[in-house]
Length: 328
Image (tube, rainbow, N blue to C red; front, side, top):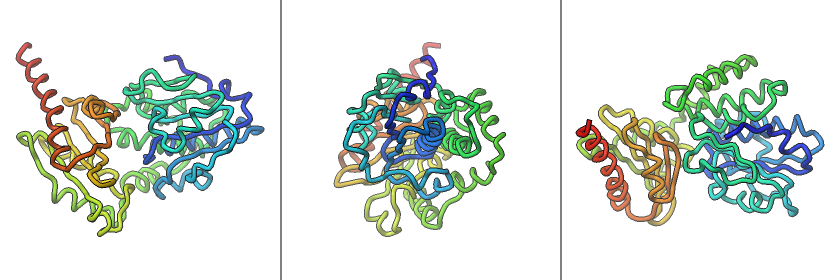
């Protein structure tokens, strides 16, 4: 898909809205605020707004964090342009209505489940490391400054696991190299936004690891946190980030599943793969999506029912892989 010049797409607009997916992660927050800072700078005559569900406080170091509208009050008149980042429109949550009503809709994303895009103008590259890397592509580099660069860098490190995931390319590293040339303290950003955990986060991580279950001959691991446990630790969804990746680090595990309860018989499910299992395909079967090695879906049922349903789809891929090896 051909790269776009985002300024050319929005320069005639008087009102511009920006939003990303529900339960925003580092890439979602970084890409949205990076683009917000750029358009505020470049389109000084336009009203630019960014709307997201309240992100974790670890991202308060990004300029513009305090300007995020988490009430989704928006405006009464349709936006001239509305930009959906890091997702397709159904994952915008309360911002979806603003996207649908906008005069021009722009979609920038890197999820393979949205490879054709959902806007009037689309820049969707499933092989890209992150939406933040794609925002870097669409902005004019002479307008980059330290605050924009910091926002995009945070987005990239969160979706690449600080450059250790397979979605990291040479282009990703070149982009990151250019961003850190703006002089911000990138080791401190990595520590404070990616590795550092609160006492509560460490407690609930320990609980999830302690109660995890190996299955499929040790090739899969699953853990779950219910609402009662979250209330006991006074934890919210932000405190659960990173648990599924830690589960995936278990020796011999090809696929990790972590889920937390969001309602009666409803769970938010995160999946991670070592490479053999395409977890985006598993998630898509149940209405979710994501990447080959990292995906998610919301599912209804009991914990055991959900694990059984996911297991059936994962087992199919294990069987397919075994058949391929036999054919070779």
